[in-house]
Length: 207
Image 1 (cartoon, rainbow, N blue to C red):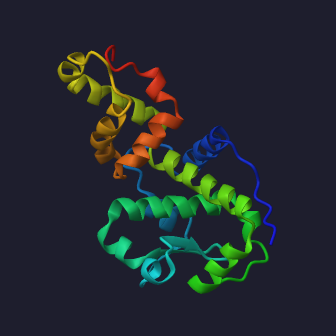
Image 2 (cartoon, rainbow, N blue to C red):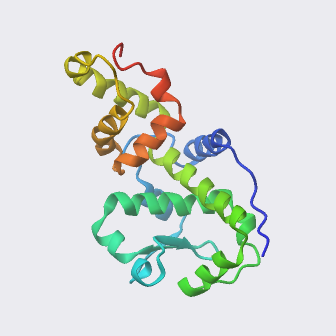
Protein backbone atom coordinates (compact mmCIF):
# COMPACT_ATOMS: atom_id res chain seq x y z
CA UNK A 1 0.00 0.00 0.00
CA UNK A 2 1.30 3.45 -0.93
CA UNK A 3 1.03 6.20 1.66
CA UNK A 4 1.49 9.78 0.51
CA UNK A 5 3.53 11.28 3.32
CA UNK A 6 4.29 14.99 2.86
CA UNK A 7 8.01 15.77 2.99
CA UNK A 8 9.26 17.92 5.85
CA UNK A 9 12.83 18.79 6.75
CA UNK A 10 13.88 19.18 10.39
CA UNK A 11 13.68 22.96 10.03
CA UNK A 12 10.26 22.73 8.34
CA UNK A 13 8.97 20.92 11.40
CA UNK A 14 10.60 23.54 13.61
CA UNK A 15 8.46 26.14 11.84
CA UNK A 16 5.36 24.00 12.46
CA UNK A 17 6.29 23.80 16.14
CA UNK A 18 6.76 27.58 16.32
CA UNK A 19 3.33 28.11 14.79
CA UNK A 20 1.82 25.61 17.22
CA UNK A 21 3.35 27.39 20.20
CA UNK A 22 2.15 30.78 18.93
CA UNK A 23 -1.41 29.49 18.80
CA UNK A 24 -1.62 27.18 21.79
CA UNK A 25 1.23 27.90 24.22
CA UNK A 26 2.96 31.22 23.52
CA UNK A 27 4.80 31.38 26.86
CA UNK A 28 6.84 28.24 26.05
CA UNK A 29 7.48 27.89 29.77
CA UNK A 30 9.16 24.57 30.53
CA UNK A 31 8.50 21.79 31.16
CA UNK A 32 5.98 21.96 28.31
CA UNK A 33 2.57 20.83 29.68
CA UNK A 34 1.96 18.56 26.71
CA UNK A 35 -0.87 16.57 28.32
CA UNK A 36 -2.83 19.69 29.24
CA UNK A 37 -2.33 21.23 25.80
CA UNK A 38 -3.60 18.09 24.08
CA UNK A 39 -6.64 17.63 26.30
CA UNK A 40 -7.64 21.21 27.09
CA UNK A 41 -6.53 23.19 24.04
CA UNK A 42 -7.01 20.60 21.29
CA UNK A 43 -9.82 18.67 22.99
CA UNK A 44 -8.25 15.30 22.15
CA UNK A 45 -8.90 12.30 24.36
CA UNK A 46 -5.95 10.47 25.95
CA UNK A 47 -6.70 6.82 26.60
CA UNK A 48 -4.36 4.57 28.66
CA UNK A 49 -4.62 1.33 26.68
CA UNK A 50 -4.01 -1.89 28.70
CA UNK A 51 -1.13 -4.07 27.45
CA UNK A 52 -0.63 -1.99 24.33
CA UNK A 53 3.14 -2.48 24.33
CA UNK A 54 3.23 -6.02 25.71
CA UNK A 55 0.70 -7.37 23.21
CA UNK A 56 1.28 -5.11 20.17
CA UNK A 57 4.72 -3.52 20.63
CA UNK A 58 3.24 -0.04 20.32
CA UNK A 59 3.91 2.83 22.72
CA UNK A 60 0.86 4.62 21.37
CA UNK A 61 -1.20 5.43 18.30
CA UNK A 62 -3.54 8.12 17.08
CA UNK A 63 -7.01 6.87 16.20
CA UNK A 64 -8.01 6.97 12.53
CA UNK A 65 -10.56 9.71 13.23
CA UNK A 66 -7.80 11.74 14.99
CA UNK A 67 -9.82 12.20 18.16
CA UNK A 68 -7.96 9.89 20.56
CA UNK A 69 -4.35 9.28 21.47
CA UNK A 70 -4.00 5.75 22.80
CA UNK A 71 -0.99 5.26 25.11
CA UNK A 72 0.35 2.12 26.73
CA UNK A 73 -1.12 2.00 30.24
CA UNK A 74 2.13 1.00 31.97
CA UNK A 75 3.85 3.97 30.37
CA UNK A 76 0.94 6.20 31.39
CA UNK A 77 1.06 5.01 35.00
CA UNK A 78 4.78 4.59 35.64
CA UNK A 79 7.06 6.29 33.09
CA UNK A 80 6.22 9.98 32.87
CA UNK A 81 9.11 10.91 30.57
CA UNK A 82 8.21 8.19 28.05
CA UNK A 83 4.52 9.04 28.36
CA UNK A 84 5.21 12.70 27.56
CA UNK A 85 7.30 11.74 24.54
CA UNK A 86 4.63 9.38 23.21
CA UNK A 87 2.01 12.12 23.54
CA UNK A 88 4.24 14.56 21.68
CA UNK A 89 5.00 11.99 18.98
CA UNK A 90 1.30 11.27 18.36
CA UNK A 91 0.57 14.99 18.44
CA UNK A 92 3.13 15.24 15.65
CA UNK A 93 1.04 12.85 13.57
CA UNK A 94 -2.06 14.88 14.39
CA UNK A 95 -0.46 18.14 13.22
CA UNK A 96 1.67 16.92 10.33
CA UNK A 97 -0.16 13.96 8.82
CA UNK A 98 -3.86 14.75 8.59
CA UNK A 99 -3.92 13.61 4.96
CA UNK A 100 -2.46 10.21 5.91
CA UNK A 101 -5.42 9.44 8.17
CA UNK A 102 -8.11 10.23 5.62
CA UNK A 103 -10.12 7.19 4.54
CA UNK A 104 -8.48 5.02 7.21
CA UNK A 105 -10.65 2.91 9.50
CA UNK A 106 -8.40 1.27 12.10
CA UNK A 107 -10.02 1.29 15.53
CA UNK A 108 -7.93 -1.27 17.43
CA UNK A 109 -4.21 -1.93 17.94
CA UNK A 110 -4.43 -5.00 15.69
CA UNK A 111 -5.98 -2.95 12.89
CA UNK A 112 -3.39 -0.21 13.37
CA UNK A 113 -0.44 -2.62 13.25
CA UNK A 114 -1.92 -4.28 10.17
CA UNK A 115 -2.14 -0.88 8.52
CA UNK A 116 1.49 -0.09 9.40
CA UNK A 117 2.64 -3.39 7.92
CA UNK A 118 0.68 -2.78 4.72
CA UNK A 119 2.39 0.54 3.97
CA UNK A 120 5.71 0.70 2.12
CA UNK A 121 8.71 0.98 4.44
CA UNK A 122 10.10 4.26 3.13
CA UNK A 123 6.79 6.04 3.65
CA UNK A 124 6.38 4.70 7.18
CA UNK A 125 10.00 5.63 7.88
CA UNK A 126 9.31 9.27 7.08
CA UNK A 127 5.93 9.11 8.84
CA UNK A 128 7.61 8.10 12.11
CA UNK A 129 10.69 10.29 11.66
CA UNK A 130 8.56 13.39 11.23
CA UNK A 131 6.68 12.61 14.45
CA UNK A 132 9.95 12.05 16.33
CA UNK A 133 11.35 15.35 15.10
CA UNK A 134 8.14 17.11 16.14
CA UNK A 135 8.22 15.51 19.60
CA UNK A 136 11.83 16.53 20.18
CA UNK A 137 11.28 20.12 19.18
CA UNK A 138 8.03 20.69 21.04
CA UNK A 139 9.25 19.16 24.30
CA UNK A 140 12.71 20.74 24.13
CA UNK A 141 12.44 24.21 22.55
CA UNK A 142 15.71 25.64 21.25
CA UNK A 143 15.95 28.88 23.25
CA UNK A 144 15.54 27.40 26.74
CA UNK A 145 17.69 24.45 25.69
CA UNK A 146 20.60 26.70 24.76
CA UNK A 147 20.23 28.82 27.90
CA UNK A 148 20.11 25.81 30.23
CA UNK A 149 22.94 24.09 28.38
CA UNK A 150 25.16 27.12 28.96
CA UNK A 151 24.16 27.20 32.64
CA UNK A 152 25.03 23.54 33.10
CA UNK A 153 28.38 23.94 31.37
CA UNK A 154 29.19 27.00 33.49
CA UNK A 155 28.27 25.03 36.60
CA UNK A 156 30.87 22.39 35.73
CA UNK A 157 33.39 24.78 34.21
CA UNK A 158 36.15 23.86 36.66
CA UNK A 159 35.81 20.18 35.83
CA UNK A 160 35.61 20.74 32.10
CA UNK A 161 38.54 23.17 32.03
CA UNK A 162 40.81 20.43 33.32
CA UNK A 163 40.22 18.41 30.16
CA UNK A 164 42.96 18.49 27.56
CA UNK A 165 40.63 17.13 24.92
CA UNK A 166 36.84 17.42 25.09
CA UNK A 167 35.34 14.04 24.13
CA UNK A 168 32.23 14.03 21.97
CA UNK A 169 30.57 11.81 24.58
CA UNK A 170 30.53 14.74 26.99
CA UNK A 171 27.22 15.78 25.43
CA UNK A 172 25.63 12.62 26.82
CA UNK A 173 26.84 13.64 30.29
CA UNK A 174 25.49 17.16 29.88
CA UNK A 175 22.19 15.86 28.51
CA UNK A 176 21.63 13.79 31.64
CA UNK A 177 21.49 16.95 33.74
CA UNK A 178 19.58 19.07 31.25
CA UNK A 179 16.83 16.47 30.77
CA UNK A 180 15.40 17.08 34.23
CA UNK A 181 14.44 20.64 33.28
CA UNK A 182 12.29 19.41 30.40
CA UNK A 183 10.87 16.18 31.89
CA UNK A 184 12.24 14.08 29.04
CA UNK A 185 14.73 11.24 28.79
CA UNK A 186 18.39 12.27 28.25
CA UNK A 187 18.65 10.88 24.68
CA UNK A 188 15.90 13.30 23.61
CA UNK A 189 18.01 16.23 24.83
CA UNK A 190 21.14 14.89 23.18
CA UNK A 191 19.32 14.50 19.86
CA UNK A 192 18.10 18.08 20.13
CA UNK A 193 21.56 19.42 20.95
CA UNK A 194 23.02 17.67 17.93
CA UNK A 195 20.23 18.26 15.41
CA UNK A 196 19.96 21.95 16.34
CA UNK A 197 23.75 22.24 15.94
CA UNK A 198 24.18 23.55 19.50
CA UNK A 199 27.03 21.06 19.94
CA UNK A 200 28.84 23.10 17.27
CA UNK A 201 27.69 26.52 18.45
CA UNK A 202 28.53 26.08 22.13
CA UNK A 203 32.24 25.62 22.82
CA UNK A 204 32.49 23.87 26.15
CA UNK A 205 35.85 25.28 27.20
CA UNK A 206 34.79 28.83 26.31
CA UNK A 207 31.16 28.74 27.49
